[in-house]
Image 1 (cartoon, rainbow, N blue to C red):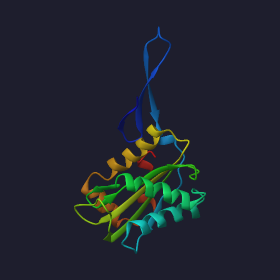
Image 2 (image 1 turned 120 degrees about the horizontal axis):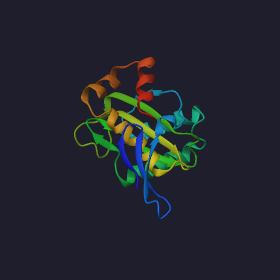
Image 3 (image 1 turned 180 degrees about the horizontal axis):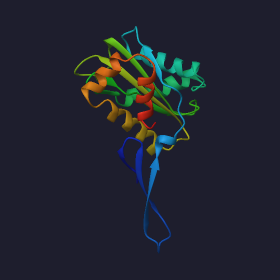
Image 4 (image 1 turned 135 degrees about the vertical axis):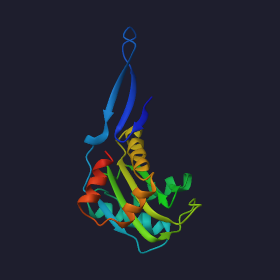
Length: 178
């Protein structure tokens, strides 16, 4: 069973031959392919519109083959449990057969987006994590955990609200190990 330990690292215990017992392996997710960072400035104030914009950006980049199915996967995940994590952050994520390669996109809205489940404040940062269906669940969840860890501190969230697209944002995405 895998255990997420930090950004980009998952510990996995795998059974070997009965006489050899258990072994431990480290899986480094930093080698997972990803595209250059995507930053969207939202002008709308509803969750559905934000998710649609993110999926459309993925389709425009060639990462999402069928935006309708990818949007359905994100919407289904949202119906199960809101991806609003509090502190004005939402991290919608899904695995889908329509996703070509792992992708992380950042959307922001200074006014805030109405997001069901966001109890403390409207969501200002939306970080979408999409993975192909062939990517194992532990690897997908490790990517989500890396994003959660990256926005844990207030100064990091504030920086993401203010940063312009460029080298600083590219370095932040690279630091996710996603």
